[in-house]
Image 1 (tube, rainbow, N blue to C red):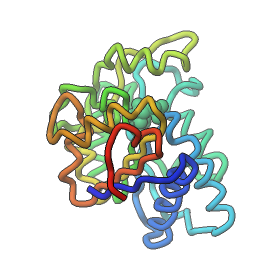
Image 2 (image 1 turned 90 degrees about the horizontal axis):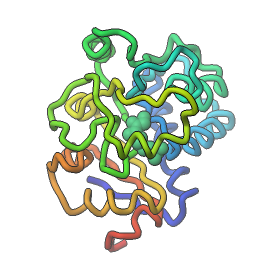
Image 3 (image 1 turned 30 degrees about the horizontal axis):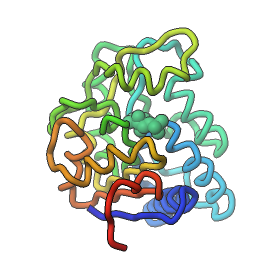
Length: 240
Ligand code: F6R
């Protein structure tokens, strides 16, 4: 595990946005796995700025969205599909033919998504956030290291952490790439920012392969980078 402890939240965001850009510059046909959430918003904003200045060839890249809520109608503002349209696709005019969305509305969605991932020869570089309970994607505590893309029940903690985004429907379930699926990406990058993630990061640093904190299942991945801002790193002791 490579740990990058940034001097500020802005520096953490810059690091992640630049790493994504580097991947695409080095491999214009790269397949990038995208996470959503508040943590990633400034990353996509910065990535869009970097793209506007350095103009990498984006037209051959392909994107996979990590997860999606169940039960939200098409275009719902709190859906992850809408999120990624708002923060990445529209600002950069990336056509939707270059992204796969988890088919959360279809009963065979998980199998279809796995098949699509296989067809695309997997993800080259997967972006991840972390839940306060250590979830990655929507692999909640108790998930298995080898789990595949599936429908998952969200924990009360996750539902309440995201409740502010919903005024009508409050999703209880999601379709998420599994931990085994995520681990098949060639490179993983987890970004954690803010004090609310400090406990999860402390737990992650001190435990291995612990279902109580699914992010620990990533630690033995050969290319796993953890990027932390000072708040997220505030409960660990890293010598730098
Ligand atoms: C989002 C996702 C989640 C979030 C996590 C953190 O696609 O899969 O695992 O990364 O819940 O969310 P924020 O960044 O809103 O704290």
